[in-house]
Length: 187
Image (cartoon, rainbow, N blue to C red; front, side):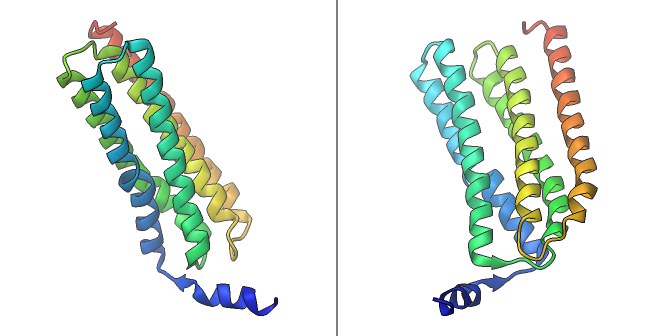
């Protein structure tokens, strides 16, 4: 049985930090979530279920696919790759999540405005949901990379300040989005 772990270790490939970060961000922010999220939005737009059904379905569906995508990506990295200094992948990954979050919010706003319905509540929910997903992705990524073989426990404390900054940013975006929605008369 001792030969089995060696064989598993030999099957893993060493990849650069850039490649690990890029693949993780694309898998957890683009390849799974975007198609699912916007197919769900199209289904809700065409099916026209009542708002009390459509909004929770959209929130739960979007959150679930993001959680699935992040967990699947991290599991794939742990299973297939050897990451040298995995703690050095945390900060670039968190930074790379931000543009995809903004793009997702932008797409949600564009689709809700173009659907012809009352967009104010949807815009606010999109801001809250997407910033919540950003915070989840950041915390899950930090926890996973810090627990990989070869990681040292010290970077967890160094990265926590960046995580707090992302959480603060999320709260500011939600607050400003709510103020803008109220001021524009969408509520």
